[in-house]
Length: 311
Ligand code: MTE
Image (cartoon, rainbow, N blue to C red; front, side, top):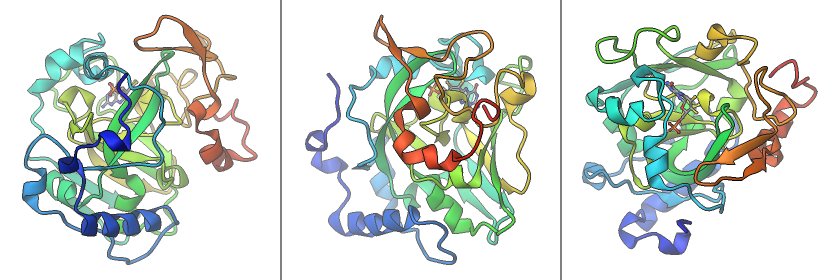
């Protein structure tokens, strides 16, 4: 069994105490709404991130369920830009160059910024977050991501009062990616309060190492209470908007993929049930939980909404 308990973490993976304490302070603030103008980002020496191994601290927000095998997480993928078969991304995604890479954070913000990915890796307080990932295709995994709260990044750019949504635009290069299936680039979106929620993660690694390309290197979103397709891979732009952004799968088949896409066993996909799922590595089906088991943390975001209508 591969449960990554705090006691299993190698000392070399643990951040020096002084940095850890500053990061803890950072994290405490990042869960508490918008903190305008606060200098929240603290650097780590570049050498600390020189290898493919990432330093991170274990997160209290992790599930203790057994991890899905690493091989499955890195070879059974959806990354349609590299092919529609589950094995295609692991075969083809190496064609994508992930350096140099910049992420623009723009739109309705006080301080738009263009981050070099290595600058982000030095600055961001990395945690290991073990999350359930529930795909709309009714399979699920338990994945040890390494990343930082999206809220921390958004606070750096100071969202304006008029910002209501966050749009994510991903890398698209027709020379190495497929041209049909959906309208590229792949885009996704969240309401600002969903984006600011402490569970919403920007991942840069998995299994303690930098993300393999097929998992969305160098930066991908992870929203554990929503179907997996919300978790956009290989992000290049994060844009704050007033209007709900168009999203790739919603444009493709609006009756099948809504903007919210919260995991909900009571709302069928038009072509199959969402009441059960098969965890990769298991044969049996298990019941799907409301909000993928994160209801205690996120149900309040949707109070008073008809989740059959806003699916
Ligand atoms: N991001 C991009 N750019 N392209 C995609 O095809 N697929 C989504 C999501 N992010 C996708 C994407 C879907 S359907 C799922 S289930 C998850 O990525 C899968 O993430 P994983 O391969 O790391 O498990």
